[in-house]
Image (tube, rainbow, N blue to C red):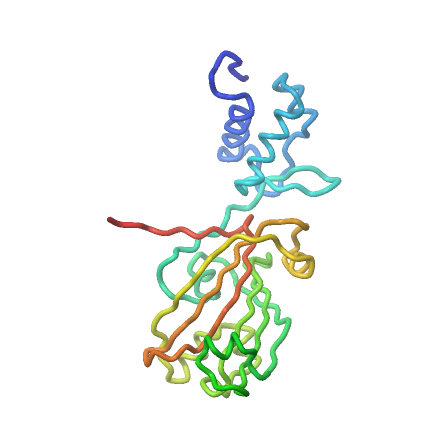
Length: 239
């Protein structure tokens, strides 16, 4: 099944073989693939070679491991374009997925210094702090920590934060203009790993977005942590 005379490394050939079986539907989402021992015997290679192939496919997000159970075919990642200012709810609905939210925290507090400066608030002004776990088709996708000035959205309520804050804002005659966004990779902390149902250590995508109204006033900072195995961001770059 492998060409041992080929310049293509054995582990790469095994990766391609497993990918084909996933694409062709032989291995369905949630199905366990053969064990390392079975693949070692099948391909007549070392266990280290098989392990490298599987590790690479786990890194790509095609497979995932469960300790003590084996390796399984992962769900396709949700693709999010890096253009257009939309809410998580709008993103998931546009993909035919059912969004849902678990509210962890909703509280009015005096803004910390860095938050106050970013939102152009005076010392002592208050913000709403909203921490939510975002789900798509009942699977945890991200943790969002949002900070919104009370003076801009004084009527923000539980129904809004359990749904779409953007819809609430626009329904209150506030026009959203644009946002700036930064992204970096990091390792998840234990507390967040439990909420996202992933193991420690696992890589996550950390996104910070600052959103503005049409009058130039910043109305929200969102710090989001996305599961790297279920979410990826794409962009179109033109010259």
